[in-house]
Length: 604
Image 1 (cartoon, rainbow, N blue to C red):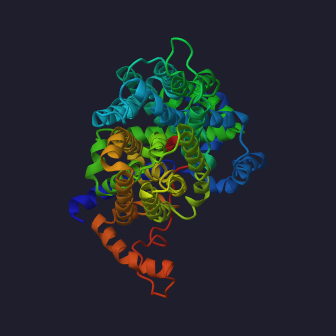
Image 2 (cartoon, one colour):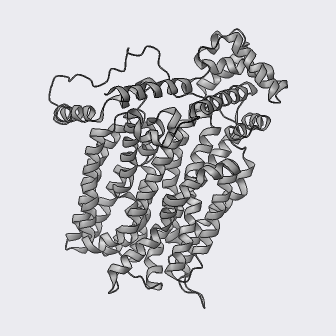
Image 3 (spheres, helix red, strand yellow):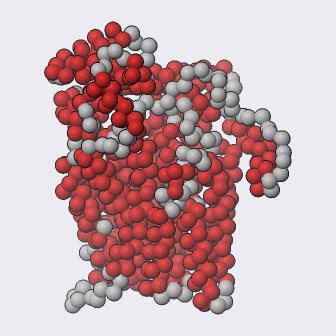
């Protein structure tokens, strides 16, 4: 590592340490004076004692039992917080249900087009089975990919200004309203151009909502259950994808009334608007994000929000004070810094950016969304009837959702990297199975094997490349660039989502199903080696350990993993007795005290 790189890494470590816990090393007497001053100067004079106690607990949450300033009732509150982490106010669970509904809307917006593809393409003159099928394949891909194009070039970048001016609830309301109106709009279009425009505008509802809802849930949730809520977004998006296929089945046989052509596919596309309308009607019954209120200087309202989301006023005071301190520290650190450029110029941050790019890119190029958007067309190519194709698509959606649940346990036990390295080879094998099955001459056998391959692929995807990318990206970046790093990772995701949705119809036409599935199987092999060489493990690592992991030069990490691969194959696959190889990292005993991402909501 050259001198300039070492200096940059040392600089960011100091920033990380400052943001890890800005209250560390402040004398207790000074901290209590600061908490009193904070309460008195922000219109919270009636809560001075709660803020003093809360500040002491926020300084070191593990030492609350040793604080003489807390009485037995206060300590009982914090003990119960540790032992009964799911004992939360009803309002918090209502908020969780709302956010789950928003995730399901996201999935429905993505998947209802799957069944509609079988009908609107013919009606609008872009049938991929027509003579000029090369052009039509591109046009069908363009219509399907329109929302993701909007997300990549416009929607994602509107997230920050919308949140800044409207708040979390206002942004969710507006994007859900856009989703509702554009779903209805899609159902009344009369040409592929018209449908393209409607779906492009739908991206304004999908992009900002996908970034805002997880942040809103995380900012409102207590630390003990925040990780589960991050997983919730992926799980309930998968549920929405499955419900989208249910809607396709439900409206498949709806007949056309007089003067209306294609009522069935119009109802399919419009159905995703119903849960979006429910979100519009309910979101303002939930409290606003306390962090957003604090950023606007509205401290009393921030406290009132937290009081609705916590069991006891002392918990609300603790979290409010800690968010305030973190925001002040962030303002000081961010001054005169170009954080976006540091994603690519600071070595430690650049390696986290590369790893996040790989997992986000591979979530699209593993082939999952090609199946999610076009499974009905794929099954039709395998000689399924339209009804059978829709039923098989529903089975794919159901498996995708059910097999997302194991990741809730395995992601923190088996590890992010191990899940990916285990599932990528399986996904490649199962895609080849599905693709080669198109050469089976017997129709019934072909139908069965194609379905089996796609279902097995979904089973391998759901606990691995499904939930890992968002979880990994959220923890790989240092604290001071975490929000801008996640914005970059999300933009990468949506851009390549657009590429997949745009090109897959033409890929099927040019390569045939066998070649298309083989194409994505090849990308899964590439993904395996990219993850092996450039994506280190982040499970249960402290901030110091994450800094150590991502400070190892990429070529050093890659060279070590190439040596470790045959060793691990011999030990874990062939069960051979082989000597241990020296570890690449020495996590234990190097740093002394370890610091983990803070419990307050500042880093949600």
